Image 1: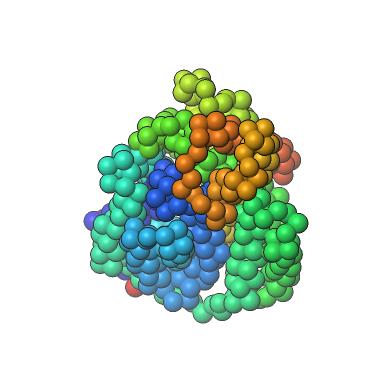
Image 2 (image 1 turned 120 degrees about the horizontal axis):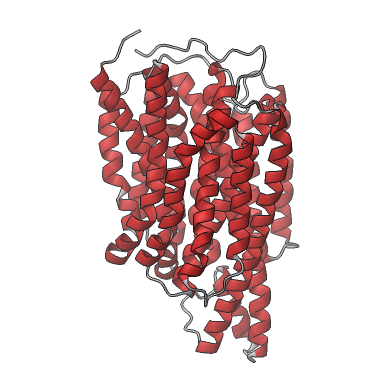
Length: 516
């Protein structure tokens, strides 16, 4: 096995950290640009949801396949392919002239991320063979994601104000290009191993999750009894149940369902899913509230979210030390409970609230999120044999992404349903003609109606009031879901030791293919 020099190890780490920074920055910075995208591309809430979900859905659906391809054809080759696709998708998104083209470009970004993400942590574990050295490298690699989350809102607002919404995608291009050159030169190649691509499982998972999210997104606008919505929901149920059956019977599954027989791993996975559910759901709608209702500039909206991301940066590394000392249960349960309190607390503030009044909500949410990130990763890596670490990491990332997709879709469905009901009643009381009333409601919900309507002041106030009511209900539903998850995690992790170890009889270290 070739021994890499310290300098080359640092360059490998720099390449991997740059790509992680870019991916995390992209997740946050796009949310800041959503209101401006909606205005300039004439899109309502439903279309903007797909700007977020188009990326997340493709990423989640193809993540396990990306891990399989890396094992089979070489992690460096697949990593570079994914980075190239992500960079190209960013350029295409910046050049998009319609909401449909933008969603397609976001899906291309999701495909690229699905190829480059699974191999990243595995490469670090191969390159940094000393345990202490590896711990520092993985800690830095993980910390970069928090930096991306922290700087995204601050950087995104001024960029949108000064250069337009396309700038949040252009910023990825030089980072991606530099990372591509550095990775091509410095990343070692790894000997692959023969592994069958689980095409039936991949097809069923993509169909199932795609139909589920589509149904959740379109249900509020079309109505939950609409034939298309019901057909999509039925297709999702059949596809996902068949997916489970196929994965249980195949000899080389893309998703090893035996992971979930361990209650500690199940509780850990639930934590990762639910944090993404609440965080992505809330982070999608908060910029819309701050910019469209409160009238804040994008730069001010970005700075307003900085206390939350700062708390993540502080809490995430600290939670690793606390997990080693006290175990994961108390941190995961407390983190989920804090997120539930924050979501519920935010629902008590209206458009007249001043920023200092609800600052505590952002701080509480940031601490809760930070307390869950590191324990989840530690538990998954420690309780799964090294030979399955890549699949376990991909599974965790998949659940996190799907949690975000479901969070945006489900909370968005709650918001738009309440918004439509409240707005219809308000417009009726304002004696708005039925035809105009439906056109306004459809425009706000984003179902393809005219989004360039100029609304009279009373109607505009009614729209804002309806949005606030819908947001409050969505936040309370999200808080209740996270509180329920905290109880379930507390029960599932009762057997978790103070310091996580692999299940009895399973190895935690095993030789993997050497890099070349």
